[in-house]
Length: 284
Image (cartoon, rainbow, N blue to C red; front, side, top):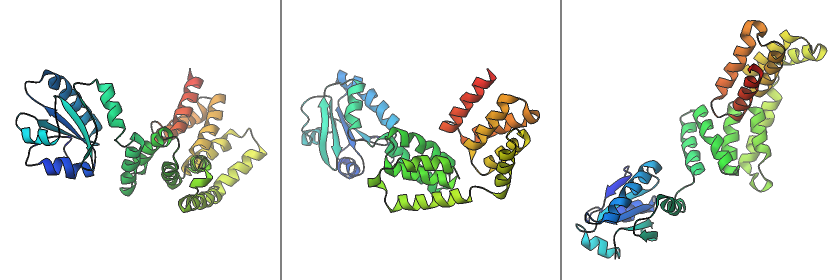
């Protein structure tokens, strides 16, 4: 059943109230045409059903046309709202209630936003849409208080994208109790990535800069090499140093490279946000 809102009748009651409530919460709204408070409440419930987009099913039951069903549910006044889980009533209220209180009631039974984001991200990973998955996992990781299972999924994609430094930071916060086989596997991948991070070109440019820290051409080339190796933050830091000295360095190529890296990181990326801010400070 894909709908967010359904009408309950004697014919579909078994499917809606029992079978569907085994999969997700079902919010039953018992109403009648003559009931004024029902007319105030129903638009609020419909709005929430559409906003939560299927996390719960709103089942509207007309007490006049389905008197026997309303009686079986023990309805004594209208409107009556009840929350069903696994075929059993677990919560509810009688009379019209403000939206805030209804949300608070629903939140007790609905998955948290980060669980929904994690589920959606895992689906995107399966479709090889890693950038989109990262966009979901970033807030899920933060909002969940850096929960370990989300952290591991987040770090896995960061490693896949060669965001080694970012992955190291995420893995470094995972507590000992959560350092399971998946964590150990991610740490092994991290070590391999770190060992392979310095290409001969990067090593040569790093050596040239060590010998001559004022070699801006070598610094620019190193930034380009680092960005190609997905070592974005290191590249941005070098480019920022060049732009501080000369905003038009390399005929504007340094500034363009900087903007390209920020854009590639994507909206909402903390590294992109931080370096966007730094460039704005420099420009204005």
